[in-house]
Length: 136
Image (cartoon, rainbow, N blue to C red; front, side, top):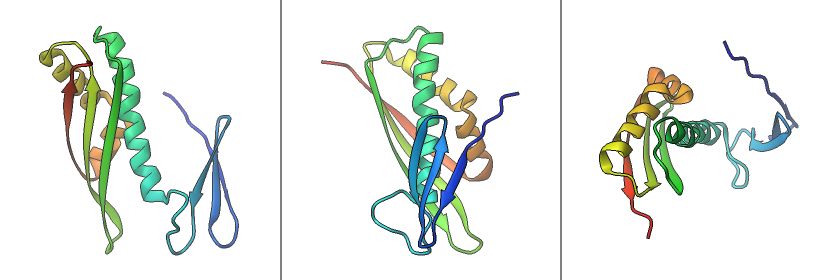
């Protein structure tokens, strides 16, 4: 079993940071959302995106699927009462010379074995697709 630990700190007014390993991640903990730092919902969606991109890297090695780059756009919807994220959609783009069936296999593995992906899937609707682009 893996264990993770972070620490976070906030000041009155909502200025906040999370310490993760050697990184300091600023975030917005104000009562009203600010325009500069990500709010908790955006951090949640960022963790979801990070999980998918980490697994592109992991499963590209395991499945011998070379790629040059990947990008992801994620959208989330929040319900107010009771407050909860209710839906997450994503569009993952992978640049690779590999054939479509292997890229589809990569996407299936990401969905099946992603820790954050499956945690989010257990709590709300998740949908997305993978766009395969050939590097020019």
